[in-house]
Length: 133
Image (tube, rainbow, N blue to C red):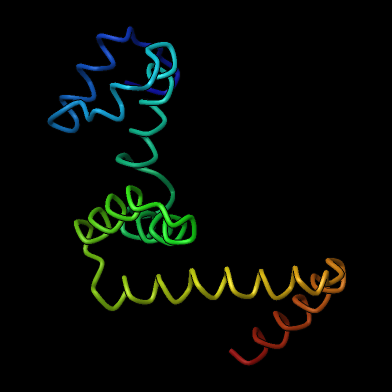
């Protein structure tokens, strides 16, 4: 089912079951009029082809899940990342990266650091790192 198509609720449930093997309870609990719109987006970006390769997409989503501290998302995206070939080392690194982003965001926000200064400094750092390569 393409994103531009709007299927009936029954067609949506049939597509979910065909794709996932079941209709998970959390999806069945979504209001019918919403699920017919949610499913095609979920199917395309969580299960389909996109610009980001599947393993990297799942690692990104695992990092977000870890930051949100959502056990449901962590279980789904960790398992999906493993299914797409993520190694234990990559999964461990995701935790470090997620924590670094969260930590430095907290540090910078607590300082109420000037955003324009930050962007200017990043551009200087970027130029320096590119020259090093």
